Image (cartoon, rainbow, N blue to C red; front, side, top):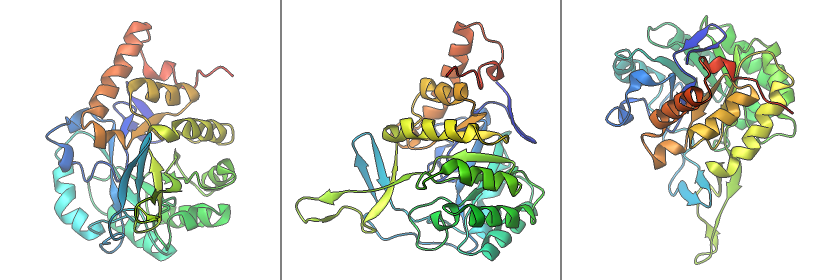
Length: 300
C-alpha cells in the first residue's frame, strides 16, 4: 500500500485534508493515527487567526459550505503544543501553511523546517474565504510560482502546493508551480458558493460566500485532476468529495499518487480507516498485490 510523493514515502495513499482533521488529537479517539498515510494539519499562519465571524458553516445538498477563514493557533503554538503529540505516531505530518504576504509564507516555512516531526509542507494558495492571500495567490500563475519559489528557498522539506479550482485554467497554475520547484501538487480546494436564507432574505453565511466541499464537487475534482495530470510530471494528490474507497480509487486510477479525505471526516469520523480497508479489499478482490499497480491505469 506504500506510495511515494517524490521524496516523501507514505505507508498508504490515504491522507487527511487540512481543516477537516484539526491537529490530529481531535480524532485520536476514533482513528488509529498510525494507520494513516499522512496527516495534513489545519492551516498555519505566522500569527494566530480568529477566522471569520459566524455563522460560517452550513450543510448543502451533497456538501457543505464553509467560510471559517483559516482560524488557527499560529505556527509557534503549533510547534510548542501540538507537534509533540503528533511526534508519538509513525505517520507523516504535513504542515499546511498560509500567509498574507510572501514574507509570511517564508517565515512560517522557516519555523517549521527547523523542528523535528514535520515531513512536508503544503502551501495553501487556494483558500477562498480570506481577504488577503489565499486564492489571490493561487489564481495567477506568476504569483503562484513566486510563492512556491519563496517557500522552496526556506526549506529542505518536500513542498506540496494546493491549488484552487476557482480559476479558468488550473493546469496552467499547476505548470507554473511545478516549474518553480513544487515537489507535488494537491487539488482541489473548495469551490466558491453561497446560500440565501428565505426568511431573512440574507446570506446564510456572515461572509456571504463560502467554499463548497463534499460529494457534490467530486466530478469537478476528478476532471481537474485529470487535466493537471496531462500537463505536469510531479506527483498529484487528489482531493474533492471523497467519501468512500470507491471514490478514492477513481482518483488513483486517474493517476493521483494519493488522496486527501476532507468533509467525510465530519460525517463519519472513521471514514479514513474505512477507505484504507476498502482499498485493500479492492486490491485483494482483483488479485492486485501493490496499490501502485492501479495508479494511472485510466483508459480514455
